Image 1 (tube, rainbow, N blue to C red):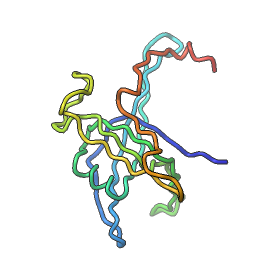
Image 2 (image 1 turned 90 degrees about the vertical axis):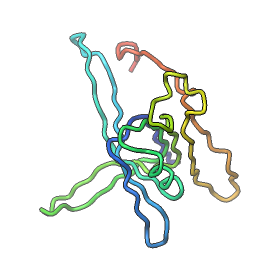
Image 3 (image 1 turned 90 degrees about the horizontal axis):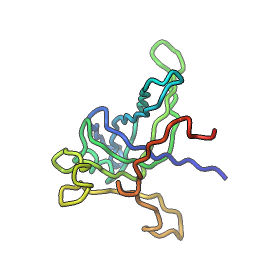
Length: 162
């Protein structure tokens, strides 16, 4: 059995680009940046940033285009995909991207972050989900994540046993 699931929380690196396929389906692409803070062996603090392209489809793409902009904080759940192509010089290139299946917007509708009020109040942007369903699977069986489900942990690399 194989399993391909990615969950990332970060900020968009650019505005969404919405386009429509010949079939009429919406596709929205943008980038996501997430960072990791850690302590180096010499005791100094360091930060590592990961940039990855993300793609939304269908109604989720239209909602992302309507509500999200550069800098928006989002939680995405989806699957990792390897894109391969040949560049203009004939060299083979590749990169990983995420095909988003579930999106949760963590900023308020006015673009402010909800952390100050604990994510409560009428300021929260809508959450959208477009789960893939097989025969016999009913909508609603997919877990959804809210900002309250993700604990704030302060873990040093020295505390991790592997």
